Every structure is written in structure tokens, then in C-alpha cells.
Length: 593
Image 1 (tube, one colour):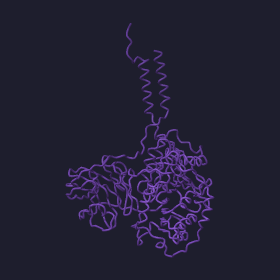
Image 2 (spheres, rainbow, N blue to C red; image 1 turned 45 degrees about the vertical axis):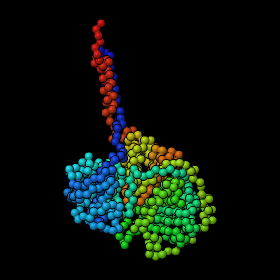
Image 3 (tube, helix red, strand yellow; image 1 turned 90 degrees about the vertical axis):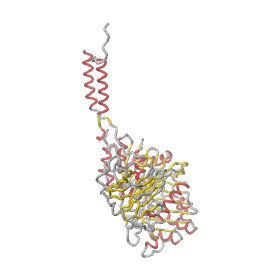
Image 4 (cartoon, rainbow, N blue to C red; image 1 turned 120 degrees about the vertical axis):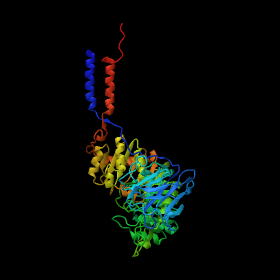
């Protein structure tokens, strides 16, 4: 019995020791819903704020067979109901139900239109739940949008409602699968692209990676100099005299030069004399977000914050930085990332976006924008440009055969960053200029939330930011994310928005703000290539080693939310059972001899 008492004493001691050891419990993280293949009719669009159309909606038959709508109806959380007419919807057919047809309306094209007076005022611009029901009063489909307090059951709808942005007037289903969540939908309006996440094509291209200010914009200027047929640019600001000189010279040679700029960059104004010089040589300069007749109804985006360029239909430049004088070598530029990609497929894909935005109703030429015309400034000759560009530093080597995808705000950048960060296995490293106040709240769905979730499941998470955000930094540090405030180490401002996720890299114009993801026109390039990622990783670690202060980063060994003793309790119980069975008589009795 002494052995049994000793074993029991050991067990008690072990219980006390083990109970004091925190154990990381399994934590949930924001996996992007995969959804199920849609078969049959579903809600396709809900229009709630169109000044011409009023309230209307459309449904689509996603199945392979025709469906009778006999007995079907649409209702809202507020009790409004519209009975669908007895008609048959063929495979792939979209039918729109509308009060009166507006000839040039986006909602009246590419679908069957049913004029009806029975819809009335069904939807609100603040939000509601919309139900498509069959003749058995069963919910065939549900969408929840806006500020809805009463949610449908979890069977019909999962999680938050579809967020509404301040420039839109409708929501549209964009994903090929139905997950009963806001991932399936996007806010939209006249002139908007509405591409989902799962339908984004993958391209292969040759990538020249570079960083600002080290490169001094050399890769950009060299690519522009080599243009033969076309240069199409969508950018927030272009003030570089060197870039403008090349564009003017190319336009004079007959190259199709188009520059699409944000109408009112926040806190700045354009160098109109430089832009006029491009126009004087035959180039085209326009501004998006230009109110038509003093109205903002045609303004599609809060800001056009892109920084991309398509050259000759085969090369695409994507950067986090505007093409200003300092960023392109004439002064002290920002910290940022960029890439020059050779890929005809990728270039054609970007051309579709550029053409969509260039031809919108909210676009005005330089002459239309300026009430008082300006004179062009004297630009540099090609000889002067060549001398300048030849002196700029080289920026590494071209990496062939890289896989890549392009995501655009407001279509799918938020979905993309959610998906890739939520599925990170090894690391998430990022440099950010700004984090929006709503995204700083860890309870909200945001890249900050995705990063915290990743750290909780053991992913190496590193975060750097330019602004003074000590509260955010402290919170991240206390929850397993290593965080640092960046200081100017040889550059003007930390203006990057780059993210390294495992062996992939995200280069974009998208700040971590709700406006950037949901209201702006932005672009994000996701490169899935270890060789390319190694280039940016080396640059990132140089910044990290300069700014990271270990004494500031003393996170709990285990975040408070994940401390648990359940799993260790199971170990202890198992150990006690072992002692009892083997030493305290709990096992089978020995046979008497």
C-alpha cells in the first residue's frame, strides 16, 4: 500500500503542476465560406436607392433546368410582399421586376424586364432582410443587407449583413456558390464592375520587383520609355515631371496615351500645367469622380486610389506609390513596393477595368474640369530623360513564370485579403500606412482581426505602421502579434500597403480602411511565387530589424482568450486512471496461486 500512497501523492503533485500550465486551446478563425453550388432560382439584385428606378429587384435561374415561378413571392423583414407572376425562368435567365422602364438604365439591360406597379416601397437604404419564398412558403433564398438588427435564422443566413457603401444604390450576388453569407454579395450601382472572388482568373507573368525609394522609380520610367503603341494609367496623383515628359513625348510619337486621375485628391491638388503639357502633345487626361450637373449621383467611388499602368497591352505596372517627383527620383520618396509584370492575359484583364472606368458618366477631360485654362509647362527632352533614367539604380532581376491574381476594390479586395490571411500557415508580415478606426476594433471583421486570428493559431505575425497608434500596437503585442512603429530610415513617409503571406506577396494601393476596401477604386496584385516573395521579404526584414524593439513586444506567452486547462485535464485524468489500474488495485485481480 505504500507504493499506492506514493503514487497517489505523485498524482496530486502533478495535478497541481499541470493545472498551473496554460494550454493553447483550439480557436476559431475567419475562414472564407466555400458555399454550395447553386441549383435553381435565387435573388440576384436588390435596388434600394436608385433615384430613377425606385425599389426593384431581380432573380436568376442558376440551375440547368427551367423553373416555374407559380406561387413564388418576395417579402421583407418589414412585412412587405410582392407575388411573382406565373412565368417560367429558363436556365441562366435573369428577370427584373421594376415599376417603369428607364431606357438607359443599367438595371434594364441584359435581362428580361417585367413592368409592375405592385412592388411599391419595399426596401430601405438603411437595410432589411429580403426573402424569396416558394409556393410552400419555404425560404428559397435570403439576403440581409445594411444595418439590420433582426437577423434571419442561422440556417438561412450566417454572420453579418452585406455592408452598404456610401456610393452605391443596390446589392448584387456575384459568387458562383451560395454560402448564405455576405461573402456572396457586393454593393453596386450604375457603371460599377461586380466581379466575385472565386471567378478571378489566374495569370502567369514575368515579374520585376522593386521598392521605393531605393529604385527611384527607375522600373516605371524605363517601362514607359519602351512603350510602342499604348500607355493607359489609372492613378490617384501624377506630378512627376520626368514621367510626364515621357508621356508627352510618346503621345507626340503617336502612342495612345490615356491618364485617368482622381478628381479631388484629399488635401492636394494636381499639377495642371504638367498635365496640360501632356494634352498639348496629343495625350488624353481625364478625371473620374466629376459630378455631373453638380450632382454626386453619378460618382461611382469615394476616391480613385489606383496606381496602375498598362503598356502596349502586354505589361502592367502596379505600385503602392503615386507617381510624384520624389517617388520617381527627384527628391526623398516614400517607402513602398511595386512590380512590373509582363503578361498579355493580365494586361487584357486590367484593360477591361480601365475601359470601364474611363468610359463612365462621372469622367471629365482636363478641359471640362478646368474653368480657367492653364498653360503647359516646359518638359524635358527625350535626350534629357534618357540621361536621367540611365543614371537611376537597377532594381533586381526579372523573375519568370510567376503565378498571380489581381483583385479590385470595391469588387473583391476585402474578400481576397480575408481569404489569404485566414488561410496563412506560416507567416503574415505587413507594412501599413494607415488603419481605419472601425478596423482597429478587434471585434469587427477586418485585416486586423484576420491577423489576430492567425497569431492565435500559431502563425508568425509581424505588423509595422507609420502613424502613432500606440493603443493598437499595444493591443496587437498583448495578443501575439509582434508590432513596431516605423521611423523614417532614408525615406520620407512609410506609405506601403504590402503584405507577405507565407510564400506569397500582396502589392496594392489599398490602405487598411473600410473606405479603401468598400468605397474606393483600388487594385491589389497577389503574386504566388516564392522567388518574388523572397525579394520583398529581404526588404521587409531590413525595415523590421531597424524598427523592431523587443522590449516593447512582450506579449503573453498565450493570449488570454486561448488559455484553457481542458486538454491538460484529460492528460491528468488519464494518468490517474493509469495509477489506479496499475498500483491502487483498480485493474484485474491477480489469480490466487
